[in-house]
Amino acid sequence: MKEREKIIIFDTTLRDGEQSPGFTMNIKEKILFADQLIKLGVDVIEAGFPVASEGDFEAVQLIAERAGELTVAGLARTDAGDIDIAWKALKNAKHPRIHTFISSSDIHIQYQLKSTREEVLKAALEAVRYARGYTEDVEFSPMDATRSDLNYLSEMVHAVIEAGAQTVNIPDTVGYAIPSDFSRMIRHLFQHVPNIRDAVISVHCHNDLGLAVANSLAAIEAGARQVECTVNGIGERAGNTAMEEIVMAIRTRSDLFNVRTDINTKQIVPTSRLLTNITGVAVQPNKAVVGDNAFAHESGIHQDGMLKNAVTYEIMRPEDVGIAKSTLVLGKHSGRHAVLDRLEALGFKLSREELDRFIKYFKDLADKKKEIHDEDLMALVGESMYKSGDERRYKVENIQISTGMQSLPMAMVTLKDHYSGSNEVFEVAHGNGGVDAGINAVKKITGTRAYLKAFNLVAITGGSDALSEVHSTVVEKVEEKELKVFGVGVSIDISVAGIISFVDALNKLEHMKKIGKLRKDVINVSL
Image (cartoon, rainbow, N blue to C red; front, top):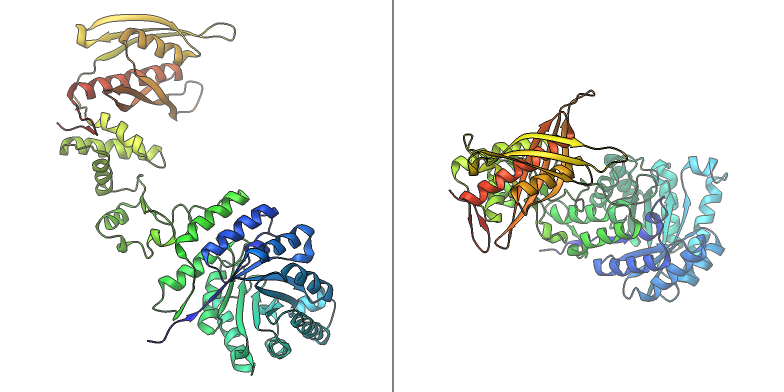
């Protein structure tokens, strides 16, 4: 079987990516990231634009000295001074590359360069020849190629290859192309440039229309063998071709693309995370391959398939890109199977009746909360153990609260204890606020060691007489294990609702202790 041709991965995160707003890096950060790119296995690191600043020059110089077998490129305009400085920064690299460029579109030639096609072509040829005086590895880019006249572009590509360019990059500088256009352009060059196979044809696509990866793949199909890309797709305006997407597309659709890369894909997510840590700019959750949701599933149908065989809804394995495992996110779209699987993993075994109640409470909570965590599930177990007719131990008979700007908040709470003959008991306590004072009074009455871990106002009606609903999370340590439950309270007074929710949680704790069975390793709630 014929070996697949290699796609050269040219990483320009430290040049095109770093020059975009919000992604500037200092020299130490660039070195740190370059070291990670070496682990990732990219073929070329475009380390910067040496003439741009002293910092860029130093970063390119330091990266060139430590890159080993990787090629290190420095960008330069078609200007002898630029090329001299680029070479000075690159000369200690084992494999240095000078990357020079000039625009080829009439739009740029007329309005930006204020020149002519003839003058631009002359400048391109002189620059390539001058750079060849320093190194054989010269790359040339006709900027804004996708808005250029195809005949003129073909003439320029032919001429720079004759002048000594070993790589010719075809940039979609403003993200103008669509895949069919771009493929047609690359094919045109292969058909009309006689010496085109004497150089590697590269592509550098921007994402202004969201098509950078698609255009790069179309170019590969048409014969391009180098892709210029950035980690997380960062870059000017809407960014560049995302390295992780192009690499995984080639790998995942190897049936379609008879090519390969030498990228160590297990370093993809670590590289992405390092970039976000350095720049402080995170990728969106739904970002392909490296986003937080890339291997997360909430739909009940999808979760059911994942539990049976991951291939049903995942075209890539998370471990192949450096993620430990997929995540089944529990939320309002989750199905019964996923919830039951997570409960069993946590050590809970519920009867059918309990599970039916649990699912109801789970759905109610999921309507109020975007994502359900393991702690939430453990708390809901307490809810599910109550049957509708079960008697609560404590009943709130009365709450009086006194607060003010200059006075210490105080609350008097009266409870009825059904475990002691329905006797009414009241206590008065101070606190930091009305809720705190009321909870302190409840603790005096009950002697509980439980404490309030979270307090959330989850629903409120409009107007000054608004009806509020409070959810409290209450925790008590029992036999070296923590029991956690939700309490719910409703009242037109938020403080009263909060105290009621705490008492509601205490009732659930009492019920769990009364009928639950504790093991040393897990809490096994089984009736």
